[in-house]
Image (cartoon, rainbow, N blue to C red; front, side):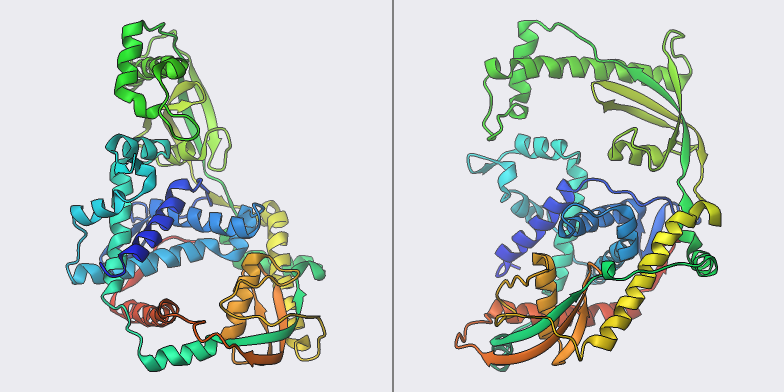
Amino acid sequence: MQRHRKYLVITIWISTIAFIGAGFVGWGQYDYGNKAGAVAKVGKITITQEELQKSYTNLFNRYNQMFQGKLDEKQAKELGLQRQALKNLVDQTLILNLAASYQLQISDAELFDLIKTQKDFTQNGQFDKQQYTAVLKKNHLSIKEYETSMRRELLIQKTLYLFAPKVSPFEGTSITSAMGVADKIDYKILTPDMLTVSSDEASLKEYWDKNKNNYKKAASYNLSVVHQPLLSTNPNEADINAYYQSNMHSFTSTDGKLLALAQARSQVIAALNDEATQKEALRRYIDFKKGSLASSVNIEKMNLSSDSKTFSPELLKEITALNDQKPFLKPRKVNNEYVIIKLEKLNPSMSKTYEEAKAEANIGYTYEMKKAKLQELAQNSFKTFHGTVSNFITRKESTKLAGLSDQESSEFVNKLFASKQKQGFSTLQSGNVILYNVLEQKLLQDTTVADDNTVMKLKGNLLNQKLLKMLESKYPIEIYAEGI
């Protein structure tokens, strides 16, 4: 752990930034049976709906970058991101079960050693508790939630380091030779847009019948909503100064520097007004729960679907978690006011009829047919095609192939050098298929093309795959979520 600490910190912090910065992405409603919101259980550890949501959100955001911000929910479903997100969690939970069997834990000191090194939590090069709290609050995270996530990540890394491989001289030499090969290839890109597919009623209905669980009406919620408009308190100078002194770390410029009171004055007054509004909203919340709300206060009736855009995704997530035992939601800020929400009735998600789902099913059917035809076209043409001839490419260098994005180029090159075939085709995560023919190979003069870290990473990946296979046979995996 100590020897690889600098790499561990980078790995964990990148994953945490993704967790903090990710926007909420929803995928509809699923049946969780009688497992109280659990989507799966691995060994003795339960995977919650919330954990799956976070895993899916992070995965969606990474793919959305590959699609240059154009990925939508239908495409995500076609790519199987829901299943992949759950698989990622299952793999992590297998490792956590192993950690529990070894009685491994993350101490407060280990956790703090990581947290205090993060620049976002420092002032003048030193860890600052107020800055730490402010950053988490800004990203809608509690300290407990953030630190629980960090402990989990650290524990997984700590467990895997028990199996950290050592590289023998022979392995280093072998992989250096393999990494030192450059290929010149002839390649051609096949895309689903090249194909046309027509659907007949019988085939479309057969497809829908097999996949009907994927086409559901969104759940909806009958709500009672009480609004608390923004109050104007006209605070005096003493109140303004006292609030600023207690919360000065919340008032910063765009470059992160603290603002003087004169510069932050309007923000301080706005914060005091917001604080007063929130207190009044809490009073209304208590009255609302007791049934003693003043008759002058209007109660808005609203029907909200689980895919509604009326509220923010974060607030919608909280609303969908309400139930008969806990129907009230404490005041939440929406724009410049606070709202108090009560669930009156839940209308569960239901499967759509064929006619209701026909348009959506046709999209899925078309995608599946194009994918199958694209594979058939690739199989029939990879030995005879003529396309674009590349320069010499290597696994290590960042190669940009014409017609492919950076992400697709990297993915294809990795698959190319992992293949033993001179001719063949590779299917990319984007759905595109690349035909290739290796025309020429040469050995590079650079004998340092594969360093110890590269070799260790390759060997470590293979060992981790074998470890997960072993753990799958050791710890039972139960999946409760339907439709994933």
